[in-house]
Image 1 (cartoon, rainbow, N blue to C red):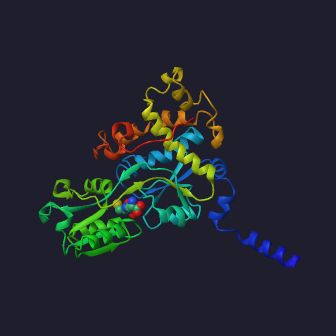
Image 2 (image 1 turned 60 degrees about the vertical axis):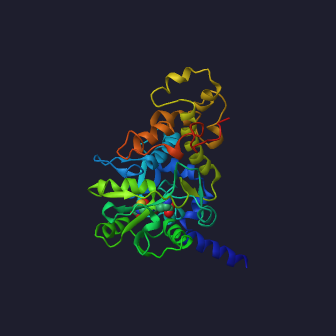
Image 3 (image 1 turned 90 degrees about the horizontal axis):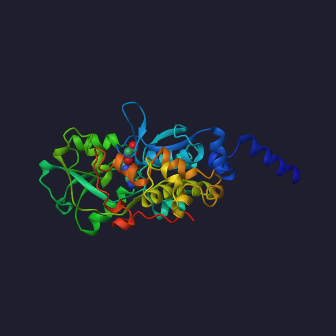
Amino acid sequence: MRYWIAGCLAVLAAFGQPAGSAMAQSSTLDTVKARGQLQCGVNTGLAGFSAPDDAGQWKGLDVDMCRAVAAAIFKDVSKIKYVPLTAKERFTALQSGEIDMLARNTTWTMSRDTGAGLSFAGINYFDGQGFMVKKALDVVSAKELSGASICVQTGTTTELNLADYFRTNKIEYDPVVFEKLPEVLAAYNAGRCDAFTTDVSQLYSIRLTLGNAAEHIVLPEIISKEPLGPAVRQGDAQWANIVRWSLNAMINAEELGVTQANVDQLKESKNPEVRRLLGFEGEFGKSIGLDLDWSYQIIKLVGNYGESFDRNVGAGSPLGIARGQNALWRDGGLQYAPPIR
Ligand SMILES: N[C@@H](CCC(=O)N[C@@H](CS)C(=O)NCC(=O)O)C(=O)O
């Protein structure tokens, strides 16, 4: 018996274990540090969230989540390998250990958070699902889409919301389902479907790529809650904390008025909350395995949440999305981070 067990273990050792379970046992932070690079799963190309610019540099609100974590760990935002993933590929990439974190317009749902081997670390964009149609269709409400064909991508929350909405409103429709976004868009452009549905932020982003954006309208109905946020593999609490508190640091920095431009000046601040945020009081970095200046580095190298929002998707970007639900709680929005104390 003993021999058999030993033999079994030898076989296990020889063939190895799935990367995901092996990674969950060792610390993701140690793995990332030893590799000298954060492997971050992002969208294949969604302007404002994650897309390479003309110089090949990845930019976007989700990309800034990757950059914040790299800043906290390495004090260097170049130490990132961006792994572009489709909707269908994203969770397997995380489970298999191909990526350390996922920052890819991904909705936090109960089934994903509990059943898919992943944990969500916060919400970096409050979104909801909507519809886009060609203006020429002369439709002003989703309720007028009776009998319409609607393009949708598989592997998303979008498919189920679509079915729910039309069932609840007792409207007949014809779903046209594709695995990849370019296929969805080609079908929409070619008139194979009357409407395209996904998260509203993504509709605005995609509309800019359609040639004549003014020919398409986003209908007023928001049919779901889509809290988008970064996710990690289940089973490594320290790593989840690093990602969660990197986002919280950005939101708290906005609330405290700490920006990329004034962060060095504010090293002299007497405000105890600012002093804790910048690592001069308490030992908050230590508790997550990082240096005391972890959040200073995030603000210095990436900026606060509001700065990231504005330059990527907000007023300072081609998307021009209003802060809306993504404003800070004190400004009437939903962004609220627990305090660093
Ligand atoms: N937030 C939704 C939808 C996210 C999603 O994957 N949206 C599509 C439609 S815009 C997308 O990003 N596709 C790009 C791709 O798969 O490369 C989810 O988490 O399921």
